[in-house]
Image (cartoon, rainbow, N blue to C red; front, side, top):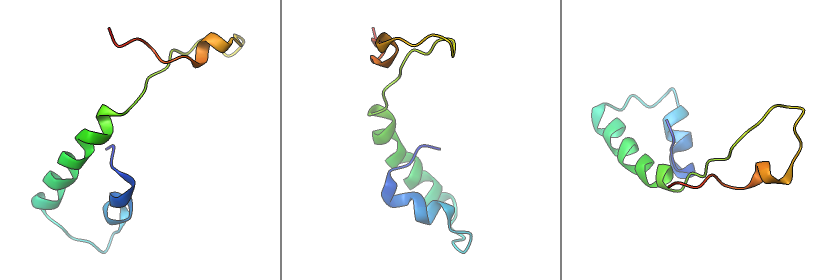
Length: 59
């Protein structure tokens, strides 16, 4: 589950016994975080190129 930082404590708190409403709200908040994720190509561990740090084109 990808969550904004302000929900981490609530999500991980075993004392909170929230129901489906909390899960639905957390899922909705997660969608904005997912939109901001960046993906990177990776290669073999023995490859060491600056090109491996460029974001992947989302085309």
